[in-house]
Structures are given as C-alpha cells and as structure tokens.
Image 1 (cartoon, one colour):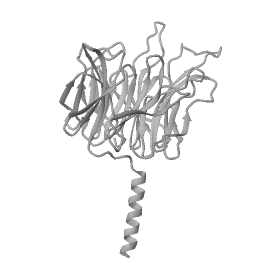
Image 2 (cartoon, rainbow, N blue to C red):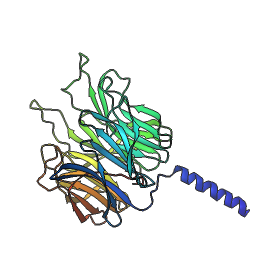
Image 3 (cartoon, rainbow, N blue to C red):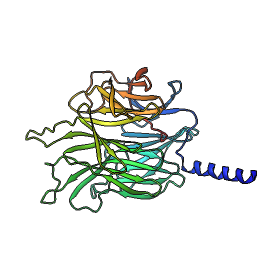
Image 4 (cartoon, rainbow, N blue to C red):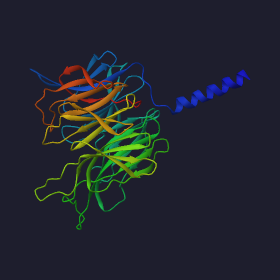
Length: 381
C-alpha cells in the first residue's frame, strides 16, 4: 500500500513539474542601460539581485542594436529580443549564458521582422514577430522549442484576409499556466486596395492555448476604441487598455480614451468600464498584493500618473506620481522595477532612473540614476 501511495505521489509530482512554469534559483533581473562618457555611448545588460536591489554584473552589448525585451530563465540566463539594427528591423533573439559569460544568437528569423515581446513556458520560447515588406500580414507569434532551438509552430493572426493591409501584435500577457493573451493592431485597405491612412488602428484581444498552440478565443473590441495595447488577465476578468476613443477630426486629433475595459473571459463580453486618466498604455499586475497598475503614454504630453486598481473591487485605490514611465516589471512578488525619464519620443523633464517600488505600500524604496530601459520579465508573474 505504501509503495502504491509513493508511486501515485511521484506521478503527481511529475505531472506538476511538467505543467508548471519555469522557476529560477534566487531572484535576479536584467535591465538594459545606456551610458555616455568621453569615449562615446555604451549599452550594458545589467544583472540585479532583486532581493538586495544590488547590481551583480554589467555585460557590455553592441551599441545601436535596438534591444527591446528580456526574459530570465531557470539558469538565470537572459533571452534578448533584438528588435532593430542600425539599418533595418531585427530578426534575432540572443541569449546570455551566465556560466559562459557570453552572448550568442539563440535563433535568427530569415523571413520575419521585429522579435519584440517574448514569453517563456516550460518547453517553448514564444516570440512576437511581424511580416516583412512583401507580406505585412505575416504577423503573430512563433513557438520555438527551447532545447532544439527550432521553430515548431507559426501562428499568424490575419494572414489570409484580403481586406487588411497590416496586422501586428501590441502586447503579450501570459497567465503562467497555459493561456497567452495578446492585443492586436489592424490597418485596413481602401477601395483601391491600398493602405487606408484615414482609418485609425483598431484591434481585438486573442487568447492562445500554449499547449495546443491554437487560438481558442477572440475578444472583439468595439471599433470606436483605437490603439488597443495593454492586456492583463486575472481570474475570469481580462483588462484591456485602449489609448483613444472616437473618430479622428479634420486636424488629425483623436480624443483620448479614459476608460479601462474589463471583459469576462468565459463569455467574451464587456462587463465593466473603469474611469481612469487618458491614454492608457501598459498594464502590470502584482497578484500577490491584488493590484493592477495602469501606465499611460502620449508622445506629445508627459504622463506622470499611474493608477493603482484593486483587482477584487475594480476600484482605483491610489494614484502614483511617477514621471514618464517607460517600463514596469514585477521582479518578485511585492516588488516592481520601473524605468523613468526621457527616452526617444517620451517627453520628460526628469532625469532617467530605475526605481524600485514596494507594491505592498506603493512606496519607492530605492533609486538607481541612469538611462535604464527594458526590464527582464519572469513567467511566474
């Protein structure tokens, strides 16, 4: 009897290990940093101990390579999405091996551009890509087997629809189990079969079962909401951020959206609208404290407010004054890294820095001066 129980326990343990998300030893994060000195500009991949909030290592990177997204794995290595090169969109995902202390190419896409957002599962690296000049509809996600480094599935979202001229993905969210959510960006064709620049970008939210590698649901967003971006799922609720709402005026102005949309995953219906500031952008959730953070972005106006929403009541419980936020990442339960300051089109009078936020108290507990951007994400969060 004891042997049978032991056998059953071992089987259950194996099933749990096979279905759980990666777990890395310790708590570390990688952050991209730009430096300028007498010798010119430099880029570094900076490794942080997030328990102590201390810099562990600075890894030099080739300059002007357009690194966009980072993922930490079980070996505390780092996947690096090379989104741009000095002369074109990128086609590569790199990997920093902490034992070899070396950066190598993990995979290179010959026919696709722009690996930006990435998600890590137990077996796969999932990368957002977009089509090239010949086929702008070949945009979607690519499943890469982490052991063989081979593409095992390509999932394009609007590949065979003649009324579309372009379809991209704006954001990815993984629930840490088996569902991947992503927001989309559509541009339609006009009556002459050309890109219709008079129409604003609309989109929907797709849900992918990462085990089946199939789209299992589409949440249709009303087309009066423009530029669908941030998406986050908590239980049955799916939060969706749309930057604008309404029709474009003759002078080219589109009214900002001031609502965070809440959908039911089960029914696919819009169930709630939460009043927020204009131009919502990215969404970051720390479920350990039951809070959703709403980031705002506007190329013309400095956005210095972040709403904190209680995910149980869907009420705004706090507004944080954080100037010109660039990126948020929950690096461990109860702690978030935030990059701030001017970068490219982001207007700000604040010196760039990396902030450490205690999400239990919503207080900044540490600050690292410097031009930081691109914080590694962890599939567990």
